[in-house]
Length: 196
Image (cartoon, rainbow, N blue to C red):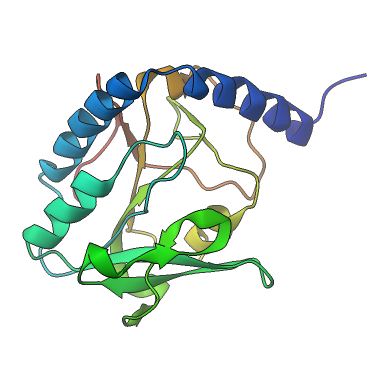
């Protein structure tokens, strides 16, 4: 009996979560710093338009340096806020990281600040459990990012942040899955990060 895409994804999530849990903390910090520096150095970071990122959680690439760097450079920054009951994610502007408080799943979220419409966001930094070289992304399984990204403007740039060990040759994908344009790891930039 052939395996289904949801079953494959579930197995792969367990596989990559186990790999991530084995990374020594000092290595995760060092790799995260390199990835954040690479993200901040991207020539396509928009000047005036909103950049969406995320507050890292668990074994994700640590984004505090990235968020602080974007704010220090005066970039308009938005972070996700999740409503667990409606299963809807929205983005809210952030001016200071000190104002973030734990939300759903314990992830830091902005409680105040202007809501951003999907059309306002020019570039997204996106978490994932795994990515492949074709831009497919394996998320945590809630579908929050796929649902949100299906509503953004077509030219919005989508960049995954991941450790090199999260890169797969190929991942199973469903028709509703949204691809990223590029992935930044501590070792390389995969895909295209040119301005569109």
